[in-house]
Image (cartoon, rainbow, N blue to C red; front, top):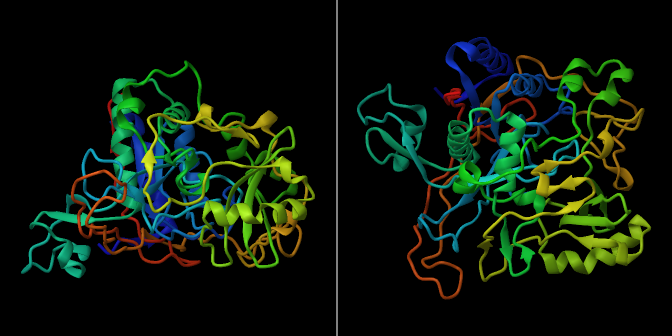
Length: 454
């Protein structure tokens, strides 16, 4: 009732989904839950469980987590490269007016510890109303309703915010996609959802960098009814069956797993630049964050590009900026269509990761998790301690919970975009989620598997 459990319980639930998949025609699993990433994705048993469902044709949609807005805050299982990971945005409770929408302050941002770009998409997650039993004189009322009575709207309705709610919204859109085209594979669903997403832009730049918003906010009409090229899918170049067939204890198995293309380097002031390198050796800057993980503005980050170029030993002209970093005071505009950006192996026109020849496989050395922490030396993947070492493994007793509870965000009395009229809601509530710890899957509501007719 409190939204907490263990890895073992969650994995058993996913195994039950697999066992009942054919009987009930299960197409979607919504995982509004999270835990702190302490090992590479292919070592974590929960990630392996969701990958097994994905391989069986089930679309797995997971919350990015409510640990934002700092960099590298994506949680498990949202850090898995194969599945769909959802961040949250606030709509200011102005339906049909997207000019005052913004990235939620609690929405976790990438990259993952494995160097993958997450979240994949954003969806509305602020002040989402759903069913929750709450009778003031009934001890059997839901735990959240009893502890957050101000968010109860009626005896049966409750308002929450967080990436858990954004994930559920996305699951509903995916159900419509599968209803319209039951033959879609999970990779095709991910491709269409990302390709049809609309990024937030500020002028000619991205209002939020790719590590904050992924492909942008989901756009249901286009995702469900849009025209897409046939037989084009996300996760291009990645072999999930091969990935699942190999473990991690034998070093010979490691090249069959994947390492994300995102690298990082830091200045003497501990400002970190996240970047990818294209085949033509152009270095694309994705975003920069300070020592506390707070994203720098585009202007502040650009000032540091010459310093980063010197650190990377490249000509300043080779270092290109891929999108913006933060919204301007004038507000954001959600673009009328998706965007295409190719660089460093990411073909966004393909809706996901385009791996050139499977090129980002794990090499024979240099990746070690020491005590669950890591250090990216020289902008690459040099893990502290050297070698393939992990301090322990993820136990089945490891805690898991719904995403951390987040309080309502307060919106301005008027939209932030000049010339737009219309009131904005005062304080939309936020979602449940105990803060993620090394041992606890953080608070995102664990919703049951969702169904869509084949």
